[in-house]
Length: 159
Ligand code: MG
Image (tube, rainbow, N blue to C red):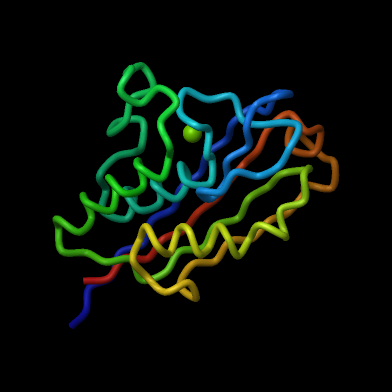
């Protein structure tokens, strides 16, 4: 019988003027970006935590500490690729993932398919197994005030 495991991930980064905005592996044209030790790709960080969580391998901070110079400014796609190595080493593959990005602005819809394609490529799964959804929070809370970006991710692993 096929084994399955499920994991969920959550991450938040604060936003500030003049920083690059990376989400789902894509550089998005935006006057604001995430404050971070890495490139601040909060969508990939939540996804990594979902993948690690499925195998109870801890979290992204355990594997890639933000106190380490090795990870300063790092492209989060490299972190995702490293997480995929951990998963593959244990004989697991990604079944599907579902990611929800909460951001007040800019609008993400034009970039959704580029993110899906990018993430599917790194995880070596078909694009229709990668869901990326975006929502505002109707101007409520820290997301709604434009102070931060919040991401939820769920991943199913199969063996
Ligand atoms: Mg993060």
